[in-house]
Length: 491
Image 1 (tube, rainbow, N blue to C red):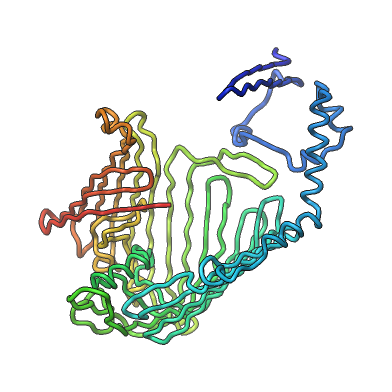
Image 2: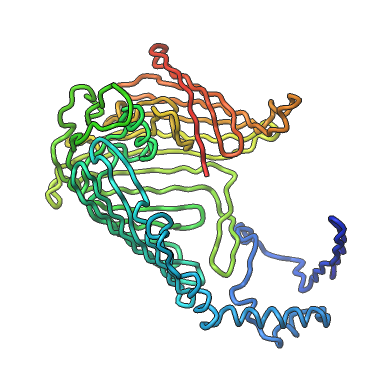
């Protein structure tokens, strides 16, 4: 049996030469091991505190003594490590880092830290998030957060934050406080509450920036809102291996809102009302109501292989799809709740499935149904990740041309998404273009509900670095064909 392996290597670049060697020693062979499947789940282990062992430990464990050069190198590194972990050194570094500049109050924000205590403060700039919509008008948003490392072994943090905003047309001040804390080494508890103006589509398919630009320059107020005063708590984490779960309980007062401004820079068309189902005639979308609901989700990604590091266990990506199941229960009369419904759904998804030289495929399929609709309001509907703007978010479950709100449903649905990236399989065969490293993309999206039968989209385009440009075309049962260009830029 092999006892020692040695690899010697040399190299050079721009006149510089390097060389080295690697030695591995094998011992304590077990020629008749008794294995089970769990023995192969862990693929790598780096023991916590391995770099804190004394010379006695290494004298016993290291079969090949260190050279004089290596001893000197390790002694210097140890001295530097001790200094860099000392309080005077960390305080001196933080003293320089924590200096506040007036410009940061307005633009960059303020970051303060105490690395010795593992505490971090973040104060957003005064103009952290400037938005415009027809409900709030111009609205400014800012916030602050505090983070502290509470479990260095598993790299777990406690975090508390406060986000605030004010609308200059509706004259509403909103604030949401939140907190996140670890429970054990696998679960997390979060608390959140306050008042906020939220998108009627809980998937937030259009960004506030895109809606602001379309409103100012084209009088297209795509995003629709409602007022939400709420308190919620969530408990989530990894149950075992690739099995994850979460539970959320929320109590919320929900109020429909009207437009408060029709301001824009350009454009002659009229803004639509803040009712997505009757955008040209207006009227209240739903009466004021209170909702107490419980949301449960569980998923399994078939990933049982993991690597163990001093800061915790890290699971490796699975070669199989992730399957999930969701259940939402609206409870009537609990804390004065007005809702009474049951919604179930299941989904299966996978990203970057390798197809060899033909590229990579991602897909998402979801099916769901309301099994009880005694009392349901629009914010409780199943929402879909539609898109009507030039710029879109390239999420796995996103459509290219679907209306954001019109086809939300309180009945059954089936949606499917497929994206294939050829990774240059075609473009690389064209002289001149192959140097650009363009990637060809195709999109296929499908949705069916009781009010929308056999809606499907076809999209083709190219990707260059983080920029996507696609041409999409939609069909609704063979009629009502619509087409448009879509652009996505990710960072």
